[in-house]
Length: 358
Length: 62
Image 1 (cartoon, rainbow over the protein chains, first blue to last red):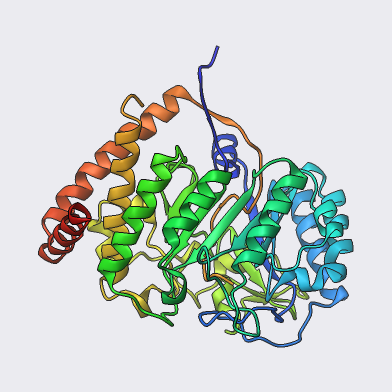
Image 2: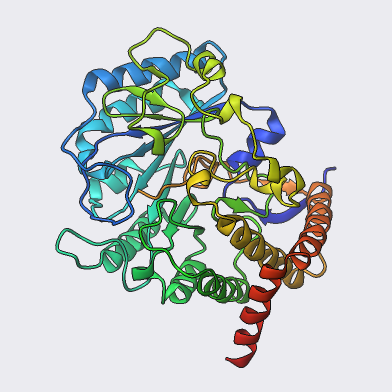
């Protein structure tokens, strides 16, 4: 009989897919460009645009068709924006239709700031086919409301409501963007997250709206990792720093291959941060999305990936996969690689120290 | 929205499962090797060593 470890994989879709030879595709869907927060580093141009019903129908037809034709085994919608919960009533019917027609092969992730969370929404999200990527940058101060005040207490309260109603913190992942306004009490946020056993990803601000000294970030990350480890948090599986995780089940950035982005008007792009560039194709085309992505030469990512030369000599390039392929060139003055290596080294050593008998 | 991430984070989907002990042991062995190489690489970079020394000293003094 196969021996199994007792540890559970929170993010196990990757492990599951790798070990079962499953092929999946995950469209990041811009449900709206409108948002109820005013984050200084956001790359989305806030407008009142909402995805039309016609575009939603095309998306469902396209991706359910890919499952039916056997082009992929699983489809994972990522409902993003803007803030997707602002337009919940607009898309809930299409999502119910997608989940029904995709059988057990469709999943939905809500990429939200979680400021708006009504009971009807929590009821709709019941079941294990929903996941959540929730933005929370700090314990006391997080992403500002339009009046400039912090959204942190509202968001934390809503996360607790979500956990309470679902009876579990499973599939709830916190995304924290490092920025100077919400950095000092990241240690308190670490305690809060560890107490709830949530997944946690901490990211450098790719667009550098509030650059911070390297040493300060590293010191805080060490403090955070120490707290997580002391509380028995699974830093191997449930913690990632700038898109790197210790676990080999984690694939890193898959933009342009498994991940694509669909703008509110149906343009298809290789990454959500490229949404204002010329699309590779459109949801209104009859073309095969995978073929279009294999053919594209506009971006050096996905099927057309070329890793930077210096990655060849790097000891963590297999884990990192080259980081953010689109935005690296703008920010990488050897800053991103240094901090990733130092933090990852600390996280790995801490994991081995805590799990001496592993 | 956060600018990340294009990856299979737990926001994507579920399927809680367990991993075989052998597979986990292999992964951890691989991690040990990677960390050993990474430490060597970091020690060869003067500016990184300076940062690590500073950070370590600050941690000790707190």
